[in-house]
Length: 284
Image 1 (cartoon, rainbow, N blue to C red):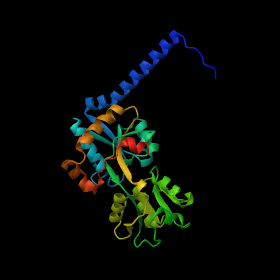
Image 2: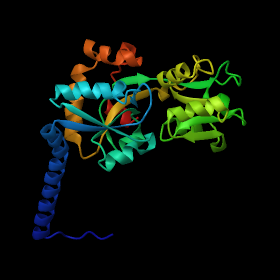
Image 3: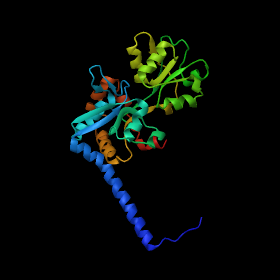
Image 4: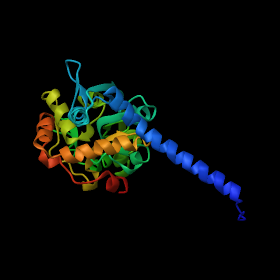
């Protein structure tokens, strides 16, 4: 391709356009944060997944992420948290469509998601495990065990990183049962539609407790350490000012006595705290 000389007038127009774009971008980033402060109200998107974010029996929204959001925004002077329930697979599209201001659902930071949203630094780290029928009749203790048994079926919540992990391990799509939420994962295992379900250690333990003696969470799941999940709050790419403000408060608060007391009812403790950053996890 030929190089074309740019006239002084063209340079001026290009410069003005670039300056206008930077100004508009800066205003957009500040808009959501200013609006939240002005209204003293913020909307959070969540999906029903215990213990990360869920609707309690009394209709209130709780879980590790919503409770953290409430504490952090209180520190920022914001009084009202408005929850918006959606399916897991619709969280990022809903955020980008401005149905809510941030995702508070224990979402893992992954390089692929980092192309669509801005994450805070993670507020927890957590491994996965399997939910199986009591006694683990098929002796499933890893993705490889499932891949090596063509008849075995694995229930995976749509939109989670586990789908990619399963395929990478050689599990065929015909063995994968995709479901919208964790309740459906539990039902799939209980009814025999799936031989196992995969999810975070805390989630699978919670489902097992809920189901009584019908199912159990494996205690010796063998997984790649690189699959350890790092959960964080997520924001629209245009809302860097909002993300940065929240991230600054999180850094001061995580690891404090108040933080540990806030997350303890959901099974989290000091061992779940990590010094990983969103930047390094996004570039992994």
